[in-house]
Length: 230
Ligand code: ADP
Ligand code: MG
Image (cartoon, rainbow, N blue to C red; front, side, top):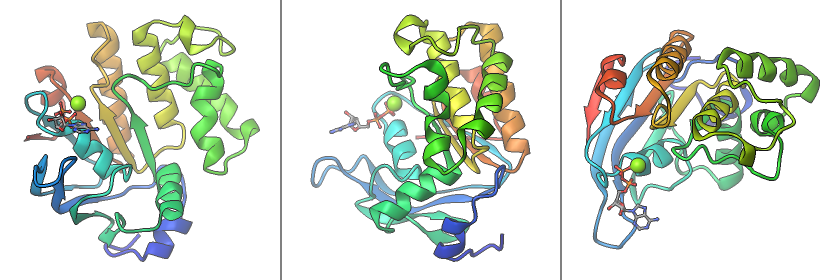
């Protein structure tokens, strides 16, 4: 992909393990009119790098992750992927871009409790157009790699917080996203499992992805290439 991809090529090119550069340019965001959480905030998240977003609670870290993940619209400024502004795309295009290029690990795991663990992991990949028979073996492999150790047919209500967090990570990694966004992905984990997760994020950055991690943990921040304090 060239430095300035067209919107079309960004939308149609859904090769796995694709790298992407993400940029926030002069981003303003306000939940309440006239009270910006972010005010002309800019940063570049390069290909193949892992960035920690740190800072006190309420500073706007989760908000920024939602903006970078195209789930919130900036009030001003823009989000760019591979040099192309994407925050202004119509909803359907943003949804498709998210499904094919972005992986999210939400702070509370955000699993669907009405579906099985395995379905939770494969859900986004199926939405992105991949076939169940292709993604199921990889989903099982990821669950095994992260030692989730629960039967795939179990429902998330019956797993621990730490397991839920790892299931959410498996879901995010399943499509080999070019952009991986994680909000406190080690918050509920014991040190050994936290290390496993951080190494997985590092490995994923090595494939060319931009990995962005909100964290309060100095160890996680130290494992990143860059730390940005909000
Ligand atoms: P952080 O992740 O750094 O703790 P957040 O992004 O969650 O910060 O929140 C940043 C600010 O925006 C906080 O002051 C928070 O109260 C406010 N905020 C977050 N979500 C909403 C919302 N849905 N409506 C109004 N204000 C919100
Ligand atoms: Mg937060």
